[in-house]
Length: 230
Image (cartoon, rainbow, N blue to C red; front, side, top):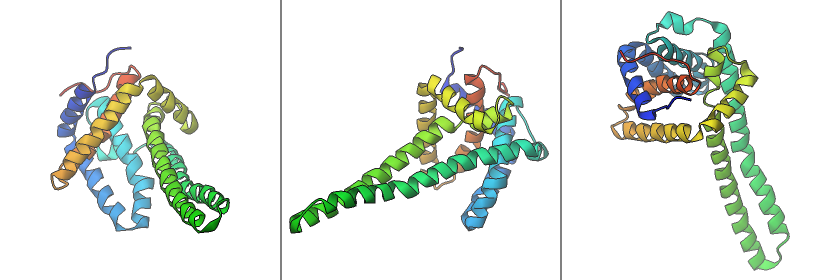
């Protein structure tokens, strides 16, 4: 497997962003605005705009340039990406909702086994800490889920897999290249924080770039050729 440089991929994503900034910002900015309006707005973004953004980023990474018409084309792939992301979101939602419930159940059982006033106070402390700990366990599991599931949409767009096979392929690809993927995630988080510190304006560069970076990383890890430097 040829060497993959995360820094070089970010540099390439920057070059491609400069060529396709109108397309990428034209999809990212409405997505942010609509998602902030209401739950319905967030749903619209999840159903329509997010899959289109993923496809636009993939096309830019693969061929160097794309257009709004091309990004919205291929409804079958867009639907598959939506279903794939919906599965991950449902799992995340279940973890966030039921981890504290599990913590409450465990803590109540512990509290019931304690006797006396001191036992009751200690039981309440156990109840509180167990909920907090399991809530954070849920967040960690969600991070792991997204860390290992990031490549699924690109497996779908490349024609390598359907919705459910894409999950397995994404987990397998990440496991085989865990160090590079983990560094890529940390670097993205760092860039996002830096963009946020710059009055949030930097996010208008970091977020669109990320939609090009991740498919570039996928293409590099699978041995395919993405778009070269302009």
